[in-house]
Image (cartoon, rainbow, N blue to C red; front, side):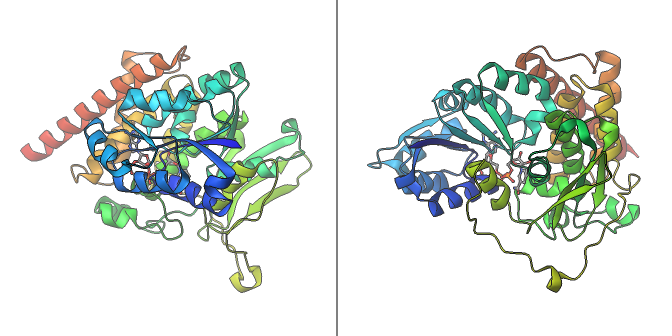
Length: 397
Ligand code: NDP
C-alpha cells in the first residue's frame, strides 16, 4: 500500500488532499503515516480517524492534551510541537504533501525528502527561501519534488515530453485578486476582510491576502525560477481575471502551450498524487462556449510593487529569497492585525531588503538550512523594527 503523509492537513490544501484520498479509496487504498495540523485539533482528529492515520501531530505544544483526548481509542498516536513535526517527517512515506503555510513548512519538507519518496510541494515558501538547497537535498536522497501550486503544475504539465532548452518563456497568470482595478488611494484603505475575499479561488487566509497584494505572484515568480531553472527575464506574469488559464509555456518555434482548468486545487493536487498517471478527478469540466471569452492584461507594478521586488530578489539570488519571504510574512501579520495599511506591506518588505543589504550580502548562497533560518530570523526582526518605527512616527505626526 502506498504510504502517505500530509503536513498542514487541516488547511485548505490539506483538506483538499484528504478529500481526494477519501474519494480514491481512503484507508483501504492508502497507509496514512502521519497527518499534521497547526491548532485545529478537532479537524485533525476527525481526519486521523477517517483515514486511520498512524500518527497525528499538532504544532502547538499546549494542544497535546486536547488531541490525545480527541483521539482516545482510535489507535492513532498523538504528538505535538516542532520536534514532533520533524519526527513525523522522518517516518518513511512514498508521497508527502507539504501543505503547511509559510516558512514553518520549510524544515518538515526538508526532513521528508530523506526517505527518498515524492514531496508534493504546495509550500512555495520552501522554494523561495531555500530553492537550491531543497533541490540538492532531493537529489541527494533520490527523492522527487512535484509542484502543487496551480501555475507550476500547469507549467510542469505543459513541459511533458518537451526539452527545457527549447523553452523561450514561461507565463504564469494572476487573477489580479479582489483589488485588480482599485486605485492607489483606495488600496491604501483596504481592509483584511476585503483582501481575503478572492473572486475565484477558495484558499487559506494568508495566501488570499498575498493574492490581493500580488505577493503571492511575486513568490511564484521566484518559485518558477527555482523549480524550472528558467532565467528571470524569461518569466512573465499575465493578468487573467477568469483564472482558467493557469500558465503558458512559449517555445523556440513560437508555439505556446497553455494549461486550462477550473480554479479548483484538487486538479493540481490530484495530478501530483497520481503522477505520472492521470486519474479521473472530481473537478468541473470547462464549457468554453458558455464561458465565451478569456481576458488578459499586463500587470501594474505601480499599484502592485511586489512583482518589482520579486525581480530584485531574483537578481540578488542567494539568501534574498529567505529575507523577502520572512519580511513579507511579518508585514502580513501586521496588516491582519490592522497595525499597518495594505500598501505598507510592500513598503515594509522593500525597506527590510534595503536595510539588510547594508548588513549582509543578500546574494550570498545559503550553505545550509541553518543559514536560511538565520536570515529568516534577522529579516523578521528588521521588518518588526521598521514597522514599529513607522507606527511611532505616525503617532507623533
Ligand atoms: P491554510 O492557512 O489554509 O492552512 C495552513 C496549514 O498549515 C494548516 O494545516 C495550519 O494548521 C498549518 N499551520 C499553520 N501554521 C503552522 C505552524 N507554525 N506549524 C505547523 N503547521 C502550521 O493554508 P493553505 O492551505 O491555503 O496554504 C498552504 C500552503 O500551500 C501555502 O504555502 C500556500 O502558499 C500554498 N498554496 C495554497 C493554495 C490554496 O489554494 N490554498 C494554492 C497554492 C499554493 P491549522 O489550520 O490547524 O492551524
